[in-house]
Length: 103
Image (cartoon, rainbow, N blue to C red; front, side, top):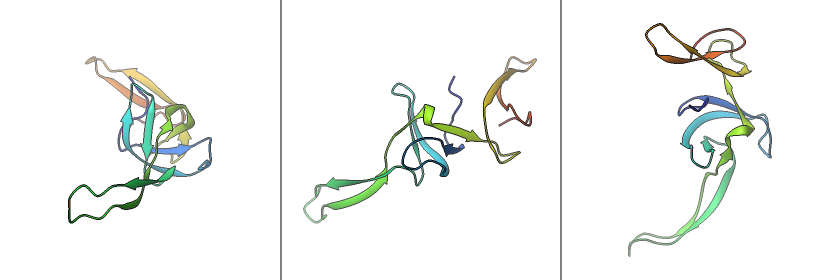
């Protein structure tokens, strides 16, 4: 089970965008990549797909390795390590290692 999920707020630890925070848009668990809103923005050249549509250069988020980000706790608003806890019902939940709150 991954410690980062879609719509989590994360802080970038390494790379050209170190220190920035953003929302997770997409996760690729097989490659261990995530896409964060407003981070690692790259320019992509596109062709025209239909006859009336123009091609051009668009900006979109590029992949970041999952080890280069840390989850921001909604309770204490700090970048924290994530732990797991199993409830009595057998449900596995994510918890903050600093404040003990759950995600």
